[in-house]
Image (cartoon, rainbow, N blue to C red):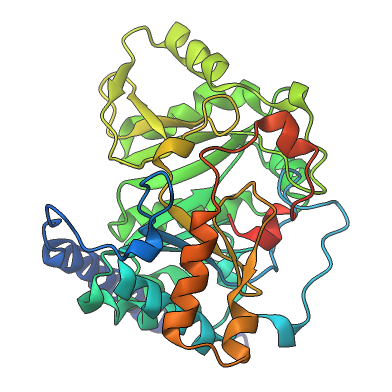
Length: 374
């Protein structure tokens, strides 16, 4: 005789899930209320300033070179040669660098990859960074492809996650498979719904728009900002090792904006915070916004405040620069915190005023994006 389904158990699981989500949402609201007003002249150690008076208060940490997708603009078709585990940064080493740089004036940390959610200890890493708030850390953010977020996001929020970017380049399932070489669009859409339910607003959606690939979806993707507090961010296709970048594949910011304005003549430009890499606009009567990141055609190097720590412990002061400094090697050779900060300062003193331009970047040896960190 067949066993009847235990509906009471199913209802209990659903109730528990709703309770977890409510607690996570409350945690987000409490953290927003606790963020102190920015000081008029916040402390920044001179080591975080470069020759052009740019203060680098934003640290992006790549937690892994691994990814659950194989996006054509990010990773070579056959994947990448992964760094041996012994040469990757240990969690305690990553936390040491994070603590050092927060004490020096970094106030925002974004966790990237690869895909950071492939790290099973990601909630614990977020929780560790959360302990740095008294030291001056004001925001913990994450960039993810969304595949694992439906099961992991409540825990991340409870451990201290404040902001989230989810990558989504198409709303068509077949095209998603072609771009990412995997089938995962339903889970990404589920992650978007959950992030908004948990109060991670405005939620940023990253879309790399490529001519002849997904540029025909610009208007449909922009519409995602209409009813909900979503910032749809269109990103110019950037050259990295192994992604077969071509100038013809890159859709310039002005072309994207022109298409949007033709459809929405009353498109309104929005103010953006200092050091923001995007220019933002608003569709008529929309809850969210549409932004453009024009790294190639209108670079924002003059206000750059970012430094990057790769999964293997190298410091990159420019996304497109090939120069790196191994903080991992320095730590393992016994460097003190003062010596590590001196290495960071030296790297920033060598930072250029601007990158060399898209064609020079395409011809310069760098890493694949997945080993740099998004």
